[in-house]
Length: 157
Image 1 (tube, rainbow, N blue to C red):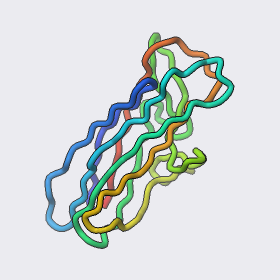
Image 2 (tube, rainbow, N blue to C red; image 1 turned 180 degrees about the vertical axis):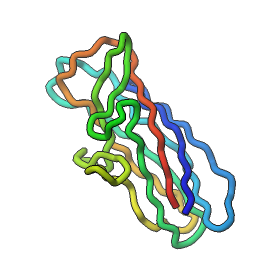
Image 3 (cartoon, helix red, strand yellow; image 1 turned 30 degrees about the horizontal axis):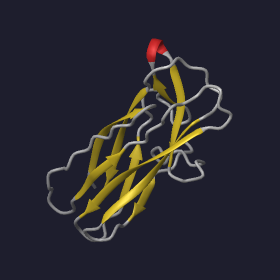
Image 4 (cartoon, rainbow, N blue to C red; image 1 turned 60 degrees about the vertical axis):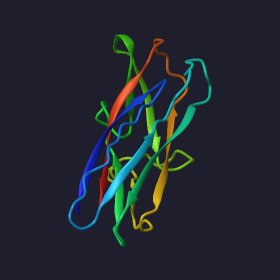
């Protein structure tokens, strides 16, 4: 079993994904191909509805019958239940990332009530793109500015 981790930065105004292609290893090889960041645009404290946005994680495996899982870390809050974006003057904004469009299954490591992607066996040599669903709950009073968090994406195969 191989584990690869990629650090990703989450922003309230923009989420910039960084990912690398990993050097080949003996046997099975899987690669994170790209991360398209979740971009929360113009959160308004007075909004009565949550602010939703989507991103994606793409990967490819070049061997057959490799079960793959993808986990996301807790971020700077240290909690899957209440991830936080850090902003100006020690302000923070609660948010979370989900595996499902209904935004009920928090994307974590598959433990402590969280979900994760997999294990699944992707098609040989096919790019797989997974949606990442983000949400900032309504009713948070925060200072204006840019908010960020750092997460680790871990692919196990």
